[in-house]
Image 1: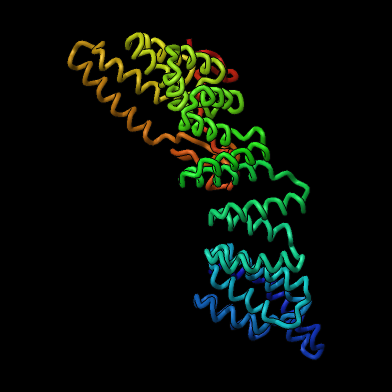
Image 2 (image 1 turned 135 degrees about the vertical axis):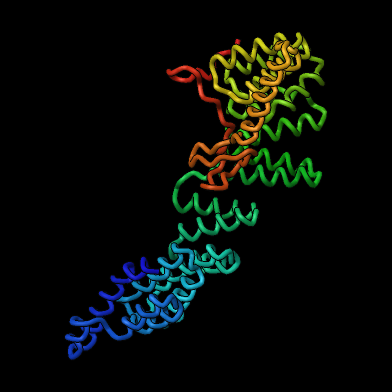
Length: 400
């Protein structure tokens, strides 16, 4: 609470200046000593009674054209400190004043809306931001806040409407977000068994953003589910061209499409993909295919070559597992050491992030199409292992 005392010193200065200007006869009191009400407010703060302190400050700083900013700053200060209820109280008090100009009321409505969002009162915040849009005040900030609210509520049709209005207002492209909203609607339709509706939404997603890799992936899964493995394979290979880092997300479906087509060149296809963009999941899948087709020795050779270039715990864990299964270490003590090492590595693998946002650095173990931290769309991608070399990583070099 002591921090707040220092932050409120500007309020004291503004109050003293206003009182001196208001009543010249009291100029000496205002300049020579703080107003008694202000001292009482500070006393309440020291006694950790902030609600009483707020009452004193609101009584002291009469709202007019010269003190609105002080109220707004004080409310914002409480919100930043996490004391949202007090911020709401201050901004509500401000809005209740009849002397506010239209612009001042807009400022207060915006701050109160942000208070409600911080408190999780999304319906109240929504009504205030809608009022701002109707008044033509803070249009862009109000629309962005409405978009955030609708995203939290997963109200994708309203997200689309707001995104289109923002695009028209600012002139900035919202194509990426719009395509993701259509993908969300497509997934909802697919869960409900509405194949036609899902297809229409995916077409709109591709139209809004032709490079939307999520739409391509969903179309591939839909084609596979619909009994068209050839079209599915074509779309999955297109994913590898659009965003190679997302190949791990479609590997099981891609292999299933190859099998449904009667293709026996699964390892060759995976090796081709690895030459374009080598990823941990792709190497593990390729090693499994080699183990099934050529035996564990071929898989271990692949993993050994890969680990000579990339520091990948998951690949190392799989290599040690294959070695333990093959019983390469004959003596009991050596097998016990290998078992302990494998146990430690498995523990470390479970603690590693699998995905990371390339915008804010947020890490997760499951894919989020919208980053939970920075709210960016399409920025969370699979984590790549660190290269063993000191130069520039050669992520497109084949593992063999």
